[in-house]
Image (tube, rainbow over all chains, first blue to last red):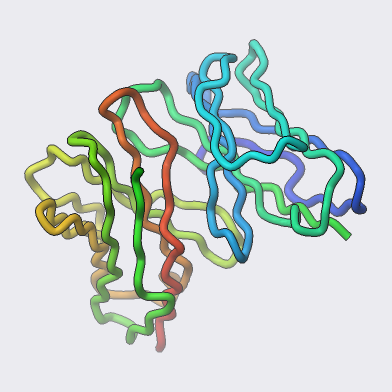
Length: 114
Length: 116
């Protein structure tokens, strides 16, 4: 158990809908990362938050947004969903901004858009 | 920009044998970290081993060791005494740390199948 909790584990929704994925980082970790894993694109970095502030942005679509709350949990909001958004979405956390430790991954949320 | 290349889409290994999974990387930073993750069919990402760019010795964690060749920019994972439970996708990843941690960049992965 990595200590990172993601909910829900599975999500099936229709095109055009909006969903929210939730991530609780390991206790004490300030940095949260979101990744998308799809068959054609592999593992891609979406966005990073550190202590409530957006820190880095990757290949995140404008239809997607995220935030990190004062209790450090994070939510990834996906709207106007398309079939191509079906993927495994991972959240990872790490303690600080400058450390050489691994990022701890949650078990992922498998999103299926039908 | 940082880049990770894993050239082996799939590998087979006999149980109890050793196997090497290849990883090469590209970065202009002097300070970076290299990681290997295992992803079984259940989907979770399991951290295996870490190597820092300034670490002089190759990292080892149980049956996993990282063959770090800095001049060649390679960070191969060696799994000794393979077990059936080692069958999974393996991802090499990298993070630049010179100016604060950058997010992990992953390779496309290698699917390892262990044969009894």
